[in-house]
Length: 398
Image (cartoon, rainbow, N blue to C red; front, side, top):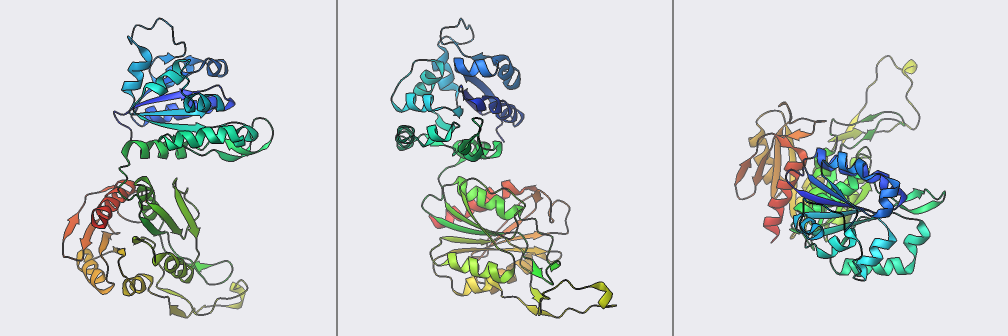
């Protein structure tokens, strides 16, 4: 993901300094050229040798150390950085940068860089909520500095509250957005559905399909990376929610229909990536059906609402995207669905092909447009396809 990207990681003297080691390791594993700057207090908590081994580069601590690799170390690293990540970011470093103080290697390099800077605050709850700290963060945000919000939970000071170091994947998503996001959907409202609906037979059993929800989540993540206001209506709770995405969980087709319609009126684009059950049991048993009571079991099914068709009928200025998971005559079926449901774009894929079915991380798709244009793509990850879909939508929302 981060091949040939130069990422400078600043480590401050908070107890979460040890968690930065995992972040540095992951960045390097994903191809980044990682350089670490540690404050003197951070070096007392975790040795610079640790970060040197994990990053594969020399670690800078002392501003006046005799380092032959760089003529002017803080300027060189400031110029080298494609993105600058401060993790953990203490109240001290936030306050210094907010007030233009550059009195050590880390603060000096931050002040000298033109790269995007991401602060990852981690500290005691009372410290984090202190009005001065909040004012400093607001000041930095007004100047374009980025922040990853800390989590709530049990803290090292044996209290519970906001201030925990965020999950690694959340920080990685923020770095990815800072590096690759272009703001293509800034000011646009996007709704995405994901996963397979579940139609209850009784309180224990249900009718569903093989959809994992990964494609819808990848699209929602890509839209958020492009600064869209994203609402993800999800039929699954098994996947992590992408950073910057609002989540709404639903269970069956009728709940999904209600949720999508509630957000549809004022959205700019709606992407129906969810796999909706065409039918549901006409009667849902209130108690578990016991096999001892039935040698055979017949379940009468009734049709669910066609959510995508309904959205197409009430479409005004929205850009409406549907999916067609087929096993034969994929393009023909896709073109028919595109027209019948009044869509602007349809993503068609042959789920019988290896690498394009359910519960895999890849997809093979064709994008069909209402003007007859078609684009076919080879096998790629669902995240890569998600970015392509969002870029194509952004082109048509200009």
